[in-house]
Amino acid sequence: MGWPYIGETLKLYTQHPNSFFSLRRKRYGNIFKSHILGCPCVMIASPEAAKLVLVSKAHLFRPTYPPSKMKMIGPEALFFHQGDYHLMLKKLVQASFSPSAIRGSLPALENIVLSFLPDWENCTTLICTLQEMKKYAFEVAMISAFGDNPEPEMEGIRCLYQNLEKGYNSMPLDFPATPFHKAMKARKALDETLMRLIEKRRGGEEAGKGLLGILLAAQKQKLNQLSDSQVADNIIGVIFAAHDTTASVLTWVLKYLHDNPNVLEAVEREQEGIRRKLQLQDRRGLTWDDTRHMLLTSRVIQETLRSASILSFTFREAVEDVEFQGYVIPKGWKVLPLFRSIHHSSDFFPQPEKFDPSRFETRMYKFYSDMQSVQVPPRPNTYMPFGNGVHSCPGSELAKLEMLVFLHHLTTTYRIVAMSRYCVDIH
Image 1 (cartoon, rainbow, N blue to C red):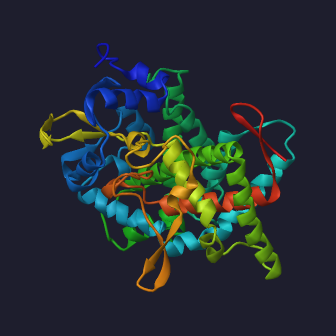
Image 2 (cartoon, one colour):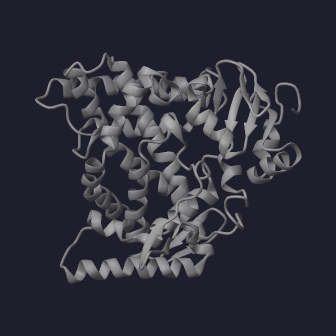
């Protein structure tokens, strides 16, 4: 369990996460105790246990986050809750990520990419990949939250959110000049700006686009009892959830492509074929059908999600004593489903340390006298890059689409060269 209070927190954040989890898994099995971030916890590394916590007995494990994180994002945000309030909000959020909404966002996504890439081309210094991916993903998140119609409040929201984000991982010390204090000051100003925007949209003929438009329309139709502060918290929550993870995944995609030249060459061939198709049909922009034909690129994204496992684990808290396979998880203890451990288990993914997009490729099977192609999914509850159960990410399909659009234009126009551990040069 480690040192008092600190527990094994320092080991978790100083060791490679694969090593930290695999050593304990070999020593103790798929269910073991630890103590991190000041809390006793149970770590679970089997698909069956993850299903119990996230799906079949999800009502016995409530989402839990540090209080400082809840203050920054907003205590009424979707992912801090469960039960009726969570279900009502998730339906509204899913409406903003419906198939028709995602398809309709394609031109806006492409416009963002085409506005970013020339800036990188003309840059005289090395490009810090993660920071640039964050800028791109943030603009996509803004469209998800507010729609693609420019409004004067957007620039202020961008600046305030960036100031808020700078303090997100800081120590929660609310004194002048501390990053946390500055972040909370930005959070207050962001809330005030959102309230003005809510009033402005409410006074218009229509509620507008994006998640904000959906939430305001639901308010107007009295489909729920959402307050304006609840609307604001969920807008900030969606922006937070929609950009940080996607930016990290895109950064890892570029690294894996650079480290695997054969895969990069195959992706370039696939995307070049789509580009030539656009030329032959005298089309400028990608269509939804074009993205459905990016099969290899999609598998690269899937394998990156598995291999990088940006979401190593998630936090839950047992609301009562829960028994599983002879173990008792005590009430009040934190429970951590270890996505990374499951994704890197050779029981489910042979040679897990190898970057191999073919894990997700379509297989040919014979049904009676006909050969048919079937994509065989991973075993249930072994592949959870976007979580699982009622708290799985509602924006996962948009995240995949924005990555496909970005990779299409990057690989058909530029060459990627890693210049250091952190930077990528684009020619």
